[in-house]
Length: 156
Image (cartoon, rainbow, N blue to C red):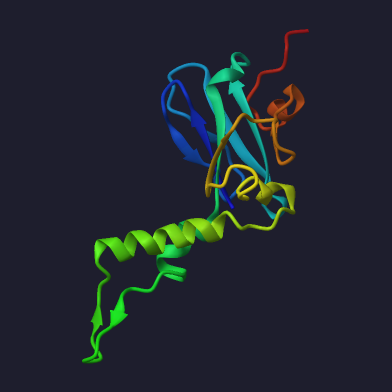
């Protein structure tokens, strides 16, 4: 699974860096930030800085299998009677992608982080959520923001 932040204010989509550093939207003020906490469990944190309206922050969750389908699943074409490889016509290409979309929505209902793609839920390989509404994406606390150097300590 891949995750990214989405800022409703500036429309930036920023993937969480694999090295654990912070992704930041493009707003001049009131930035949406996010990062991986644990990629193995797909756990991430998000915040709005300075702390303010959380309404502008969303997390995008993308089914990695769907994203990689073009090179890992979909055939490049068909072999004609002459043994040559020919590209599919647009109708067949669209049908192939619909099949991949269907496969992505048959994701096992567990773990919870993957079940959001399932046909019984969103039935889509791209999911838009508010942070804190899934067990693997949390709002950062002030302590966590201080540790990352994203929030100045409160004056004493």
